[in-house]
Amino acid sequence: MASKGWNMTKLDLPSLNKPEVPTCGLNSDDRPRYTLLGLVLEKTTSQTYSDAMQSALWEPLILKRTSVDAPINDSNIVILVVLMGVVSELMPELKLRAGYTTLSEMNILGLSILQSTLLTQSLTRRWLKPWSMNSDPLAAVGAPREIVRMNMPVAPNSNETCLVNLYTKGGDLGSYSALLVLDKDHNIGISILVAGKSGTPRTILGSLLTETWIPALQAAACEESKLHSDGPGLKIDQFITNGVDFHDWLDKKGDSRLLPCGSIQWASNLGTD
Image (cartoon, rainbow, N blue to C red; front, side):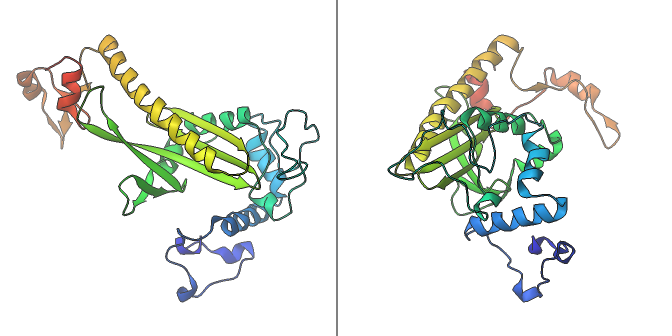
């Protein structure tokens, strides 16, 4: 936060000299940063972290089984007695960056992001986009830190490909693991909760689901466009730039359209010229 130029002394945090401000902390451990963010949230709202989350997130989304406190009724919980013991209260420091939830309420949370339930659509788009790239062409850095990119065909049997950004967040606590994957391009999400000796299954399940569902949705969208469209892309009915109306030019060109990347191969798969 200091690297963004924010005045952190207003939150009773110490001021930093310029050499002390990190230029990049992307490779550091996330846990202390989430704990610090939880403390800042308590300071700015004058509430406990739990109360702040209750008023800002859990109550508006009607999340009745999501909390930083251990659930009283554990009849519908996978308890790994051998591995972790009974479901217990989180330590105070953990309550600032962890909690308890259910698969159904993780789904509600993911849908609320995709549907801009709590945020405006413009603010959602601001968060759900890469902020910078790295040496791996299939990975990116953004506000949701873990962005995985899929290189997939634009249409069935096509040699042309496109990149789909998957905004993910995963975490482990003891023997429990969670993963949330959001695909804004196809407007779907995947929620995974796993209990076991290792958090590896959540990664394997996430890969299997995304590699199966997302290409299938891309193919379905292609088929649907054949049924409900008079052609690929967006038809241009009016084009004015710098005060100049290109109406006559459009009439001479006939059917003018805006097409996505890979348009030639995509159009041929739709059976159009």
